[in-house]
Image (cartoon, rainbow, N blue to C red; front, side, top):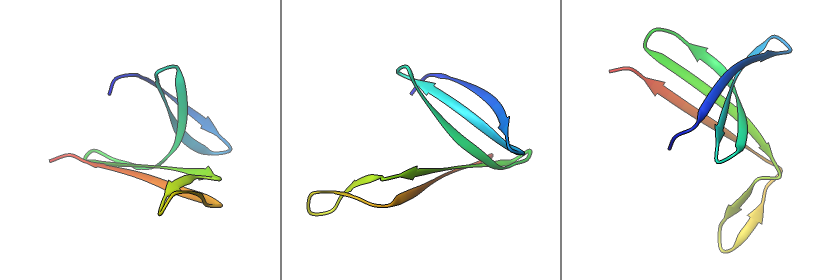
Length: 68
């Protein structure tokens, strides 16, 4: 996957804004240091598949990176 990113701040929180295929998604930077980084975002009315397409109130997406 390729794209671009920007870093922003809002209400005292840091965000990484990822743009791919002309769509931008903001994820909160939860933690970052020399060997690890964590992002998180909340999706309201998230759709998922379980015996067909369903909608939930919200979903939390977490992305964790670690340097080896």
